[in-house]
Structures are given as C-alpha cells and as structure tokens.
Length: 316
Image 1 (cartoon, rainbow, N blue to C red):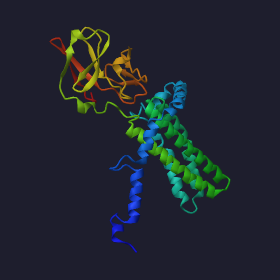
Image 2 (cartoon, one colour):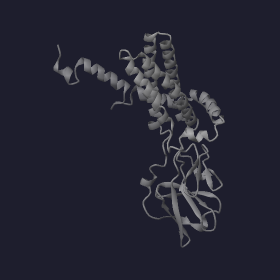
Image 3 (cartoon, rainbow, N blue to C red):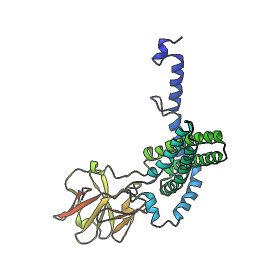
Image 4 (tube, one colour):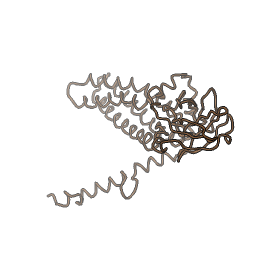
C-alpha cells in the first residue's frame, strides 16, 4: 500500500533517503560527507612529502619547449582538461557497447583507444600539477591516484577480453569507469573549487573603472625598480624604465596570483617569483609558462609630473 505522505517526500522510505542524501551531499545543515572528505584531503599534510618529491621529479624533466605546449600556453588555457575528453569518451562509449549484444570487439577497440590517449593526457596533467599550490597539489595527488587506478582497471579489462574472458572484461571496465568518474569529480573540485589552472586576472576589467587613474608622482618612482601601487582595488606592478617611460601591469600573476612586483626583470620581461611565468612588460604577453593567459597591462602617461594609467583593452 502507498501512503500519500510517501509521495510528497515525508513518508518513512523517502525520509530515510533524504536523510542519507543530507549526510552525503551539501544541505542547509552543513557541507555533507563528500565536501568534508575533500576538505580533509586539502588539509592532509601527510601528502606533502610524496607531493614534494614527485613535484621535483616532474619539474626536472628535460621537456624543453614541450613543457609550455603541455601547459596549454598555445591554447590559452590548460590542455589537460581537453585531452582527457578522448579517454573518458572512449571508455564511456565502450560501457554503452558492453550493454548491447554483438559489440564485443568494438568495445575492446574503444578501451584500447582510451588507454593510448590516457598517456599524453596524464603527462599534461602531471606538468600542470607540479606548478600548483600546496593544498591544490594534495587534491591533485588523490585525483591522479584515482585516474591511475582506473587506467589499471581498463588495462586489466582489455587483457581479459583478449584472453576471451568477456564477463571479467566487462566487470573490470565498469569498475574502471566508476573510478575514473570519481577521479573526474575530484578534478572538478581542483579546477572549480580550488581554481587550479584558472586565469587569476580574468576579473580585472570588471574591477577597474574606465578612464585614467593617478598612481603617484613620477619623481617618487625609483628608476629601474619595481614597486607596488593600486588602481581602484587592483594591485599593480609599476616599473619606471627611463626618465619618463613607465610600465604598469596587474601585479597578481594570471597563473597562481604570485606577486610580480617581487619578481625579476630581464630582457624587457618580468619573471614571477613563484612558478617562473614570464610576462613581457610592453604588452603583458605570457612569453613563458606555466601561465597560459597574458597579464592585463595599462597604458601610461605623465601629466604635470604625475603618472596616470588606463587599462588597455584586450583587443589592443
């Protein structure tokens, strides 16, 4: 017998389900077990040791200019999220085919494609991970561990299929898809909750009012040295290069918000002190990664001995 209260969410069965969901997922009563678990991962100093060692190994790899390509500087944002679409899409398609009759060989082929595509995607992910902040690296390590487990499960699935053990191959494939899905959710937390890979200067055009802004007297700026000033609520790097030539860029690095005013000046560029991203002073272009977005730059002029700046439009 079905009671009316069961249909509006207040019956015994529905109430049990809702209470279970409230314990797992965020609700008005709190963050739920999922977010609490991620918070524990972010605060887990136990992961700092292996993260530090792995980070040093990845940063020492002799990748040359390929490192910037793996970061996605040519794309304007990290390449890893794009690259993982191939293995995930192949494996999800294989799972669909496993539910249909007569698609055994096609499903196996897709699993093989996914395994082949997972390798370069993983390399790009590790290169990005090695340049993250400590809390992000902790979450990224768990994300990588989940994905590695999924890859091993899919490798086992392909091996079982090649030996004619179709049932085991399907079981391992579905297990791999589940684990990779969990890894993807953790990757989403890393990208959107922790802003890993995000352009940290994207909001600048909304924070700086149009028009010219005074930042102080030209005579007060030391020649050849970077100083920090503010335009509205945005911190900027100011460099007086000659008697009346001044460069002004947003101070927070687009990669991870490092203070560029504490960086080094070399060959007309500023190098971020945190992760080594290089930006051209003239136009803010990201000459070298891991930054994938250029730095917002300001036009400058000197009026009656005072320096005025105006945010340069991106199309300029």
